[in-house]
Structures are given as C-alpha cells and as structure tokens.
Length: 217
Length: 217
DNA sequence: TAAAATATTTAGATACCTCTAATTTTAAAA
DNA sequence: TTTTAAAATTAGAGGTATCTAAATATTTTA
Image (cartoon, rainbow over all chains, first blue to last red; front, side, top):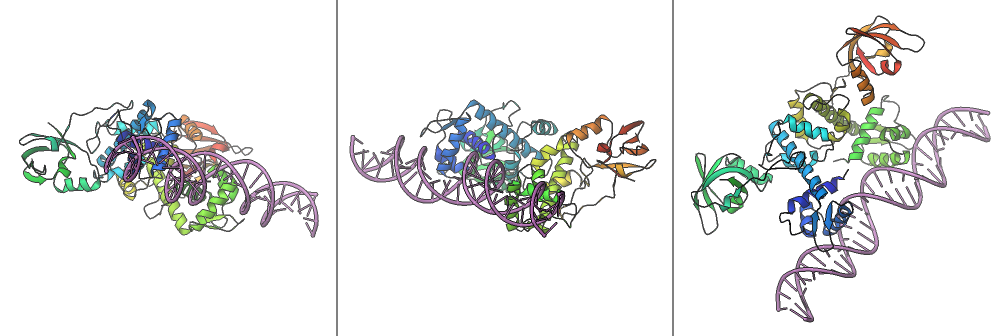
C-alpha cells in the first residue's frame, strides 16, 4: 500500500496538525521527521500526487480525508501494540514507543483486529492517549493541563503530553502514574511551579512537568 | 544493523543450504527470493563485503558463522511470532507465514525474549519446525518422510515440509494435523501413493502429500 | 516599502536495490 | 576435445529516499 516513509510522514503531519486552519510547515515537518527541508518538499509532492495530502507550494501541507484515515490507522496500530507490550510483555511505559514505531507498519488487517480482541478492545494506550477504532473514531477526552489548575483544585492524572523516556522515568521515580489523584497545594506565581499532593506524598514540580501532565477534573 | 533485503537473503541462503559442502547457486537464490540472478550477484557481493557470506565468483555462496547466526535469529523470531499468532490471536497455521515474514524483522532483543517468555519458551512452531534459542541452538528432530515408510509402519505426524497455505488447507480439510498418529495401510509401488489410517478415517494420498509430511516413528 | 532574514523549493548528486541486455565462465553434449 | 548449452557476472539504467548547495519566495525588520 504505502511505503514506510510515506506512513511516517502522514503520522507526523497528523501529530503536527493541531490547528485545522494552518497547514503544517516544511521546516516543522523536517524537524519532526529528523530530516532536511528539501527531503520534505520531495516527499510532500509525492504524497500530494497520491492525494494523501493537500499541498500548495510555500503554503504548508494538510492531510486529505484519505491521508487522515491512513494516519489514524497507523496510530491505532501503534497504540494497540503499546498496550500489548505493557500488559502482556512486561514493558514499562517508557520502553514501548521505539518498538511500537516498528510494529505499527506491519500490514495485516486480521493481525490488528485480533490483537484488539486479544487485548479486550482497550480505549487508551499506556500514556493515556485514545486508541482509534477500526473506523478511525476515537474519544476526545476532556482533559486539562496540570499547569492550568489553580490552588486547591484537584483531579485524576489521565495522560501525559511528553512521552519521552526521560520524562516518563522521572514520573516513575516520583510515583506519578496514570489514574492517580493530584491536588494542587500551592502554585508559585513567579515561575508557575507547583506543590502537589499525590497519594501520601507532596512534591514540588516545575512547569516542565505540569505542562506535560493531563488531568481530568 | 542489517537491511530488510539483507536479512531475507541470509534466511534464504540458510534454507537452501541443505548440504554444507555445496554452495548455494545464484539461480536457486534468485528463485527463492523471487528476483533475477543479476540482483542476487549484486547482493551476494554486498553480503560478502560485510563478511556474512563466503563467496567466490561462479562458486556459489555459503553462510559465514556470523551470517548463520544472523539467519538463525531471524528464523527464531519468525517462528516465535508464528506461535504467538496461532496460540494467542487465533490464526490458523496456513495464515501465519505471511505476517511472520514482516514481524521477523522487528529489531528489539527485549521484544523477542519477552515474547519467548510470554509463550512459555515453545520448542516448535505451528508447522513442527524447531525454534532456535537465544544462542541459535535448536533440536534437530529425528524425523522421516511419510513417503519413506513402508506398509504397516506407523508414527506420529511431527512436521510438514511444504508450508504453503494450499497444502496446509488440504491437510485441515482431511483432518490431518500435528501430533496425530498415522499408519501406512498400503503403499502402491507404481506411483508411491499410500492408503493411510489417521484416527478413525482411512485415506488415499499421493506422493505430493507423503513427501511433505514428517513422521516420528 | 525597501532591505535583510528566514523559509521553501529546485537542481544535481548519492546510496540502495532492482531490472534488462550483453558478456563471460563453467558444465554438458556431440 | 571442440561445440553447444546453461549459469553467472558485468554494464548500464531506473525508482525511492535522501543529501548539499543554489535559487526563489515569503516574512520580518528597519
């Protein structure tokens, strides 16, 4: 169907396309794909020829409907494999991304539908991100950044924005995990850092942390 | 480490290298890889530069020790994934090969060691082929082709030589499966066909069948 | 708004893996 | 053993995905 590179580009465009009005810039895509802008231009033309993206020179790139659909199927596979790795193979949440990056490109409808069934149709991956179903539909959670809470507010940790191993290991070290209750004991106006209560410990965290934790109030 | 093509070539050479004295011919490898002889020559040179094979022009190609080791690790991964697909995801034995061809190239030591553990260290894949361990060691079964049995001999079906979906579906249709006892009721000298007893049914099978079934007496 | 800085695209080249067509080597047959 | 046939290799080229360097377009700044 599509090449490895093509699939990775579609996924990257999807992840960068936060505002549906603005196209994804060549440089942003180059940064995301760890490649050069000129390579991006070439690939984007190819994706455009295949009607996976809408592209006008110097105007940035948008996913077409079929491009979005393809991207969502890859994301579905990625997240299902992450669940498999954590729940069945004892991987920790900071180890799954790299392997899932490879597994997501395996081409078999049956493999994914059976895996989904085997895992009992999980709704979220180990980082709290939603798993699209076979039609590409997924629940958009109503979640808030911890950074946006104010003193004395509290909620449940439902996701992380930064999924780098470094950040995830930091969270592990401090017993911060999905599903736990977090309360803002104090917020420093100067730098935004917070004193938070999580289970029986209180902890001071910087905005590097609070801006990467999703809370459901 | 190695490219997809390189890994597939090593695997193909391993499978073709039945007699350790004779090198694998360019044409045989081209047939196995579904490619042209000229492409094989190019690739074999590249593998030789990387010391994965021993190659002298016009003399055929042999796996080096490191080439053999690499091939065995790919075969290990292939067969472990096959077990996973059959035992955990309800694939039938004629459906697993194609998907395992892709899964075998995922690069993660931990993935395979954890998968091995998850599957409880299986010794054989769904077709009865042995699964090499992490060191590349595996048990060579003492098995005989059904075709080599004579009248009134019997044994257990321990493997199949042809693993094509067509052959496997034929076996399924006739309730011929791994672990079952087969007895030779009669053997036709003219064409080698046999009347066999398998559980409560007797069945006449051609040499196309008997030459692809492994029996342990 | 003109100049400078930044972003993007184009041109030309490389690595990988493949192909066809032509050549060379080896093996088989007369 | 010479000829013929088969097998293997080389030469030259194409597609994919990438790169560097140069050119062009857009945006920012003065």
